[in-house]
Length: 327
Image (cartoon, rainbow, N blue to C red; front, side, top):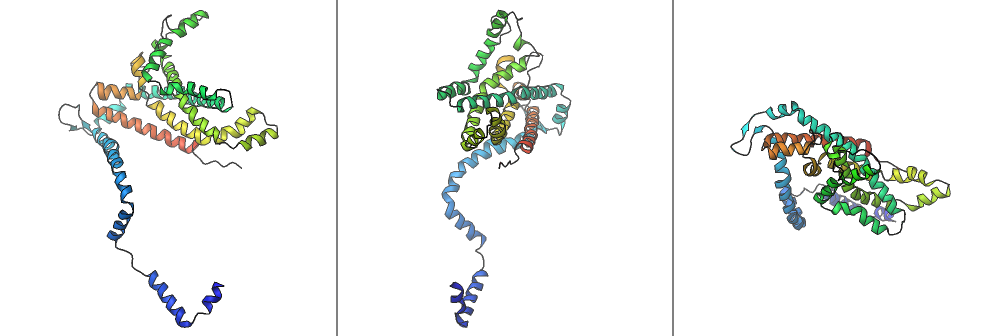
């Protein structure tokens, strides 16, 4: 209908329409200032509300990040003026055996911590999602350590794993006829005990992430699998576990970052000992930068920590963050 209407237009009308279209096409753009002003008038209130957040980001994120990088090339111990020393502190880090020991301890802690935390969180989420009675009560009990002060939990953990017979775990071991263990006073056990503390503290939050993921899985997939005769274990490995891949990726990232930032338990229970076996990179940074007032070397350690976390996150993104399609 539209085609015949245009076809029946007079030659004069068609020429006029083409002229108008051509003039609109070649209409000059608004000057840059006018476009900016128009955009500002349209979104002024949004920009105004963003200003406080932007100021906070610049002051507490961008400025410290840039200042600490500059500080790595300076010699400044709070008192006195900073002095430029080039790569002195970076070279000192390369030759610092204790710093490398702290990095290795942190990696060991991550090995003890990441997979058990994810596994325990998933198991707790499966228990709650299974339709067990009083699921809300169990959810609150499992989540309680997350909202409890770390100081309180560390105090309880220190009492449980005290390296004498007065410790609760040693009391149970002696009751079973097993020799008393030193736990926090043993360089081979202390780091694992601290990892257990962190797992107990954080597993409740990973449970919430996995529970949210389980709630989003389509129930029809389970029903179809049951009709086909699939066992619960097969359903878990072929449906539940693969569909939780985005949750696995997110939890792996946050637990990895958290494992490399471990400080509280070391500070409260071991002080980095025995024999530096629990001295992690963040605790060593604290000792150098704050306790020792060597802020420049502390800045170097902070950037080392930043680069380690960045590399691990990129590796995890490459192997865990790939998009997966299910048909």
